[in-house]
Image (cartoon, rainbow, N blue to C red):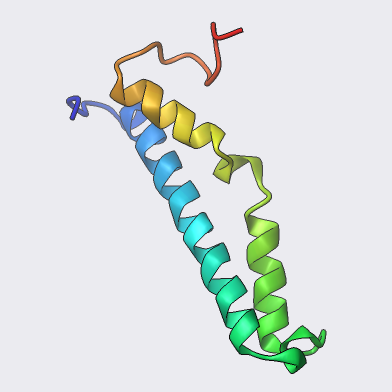
Length: 88
């Protein structure tokens, strides 16, 4: 693992961890809704609200697959430019 000497080096690591955490949360919410049965789909059901909120959180750009790319570039010692820079 590259030496981590500044807080800037933590950004790609934390970004990738955020994406993974969000992906797992979405999977858990989907399973919970499935196990909750048909009544879990009602708007006043707590499972439905949690499922909707977690899915909405997963749509944010900060937890998109771009964070995985930034982490990969960091691990490979590539440029610290924005993800996708120079790949077009």
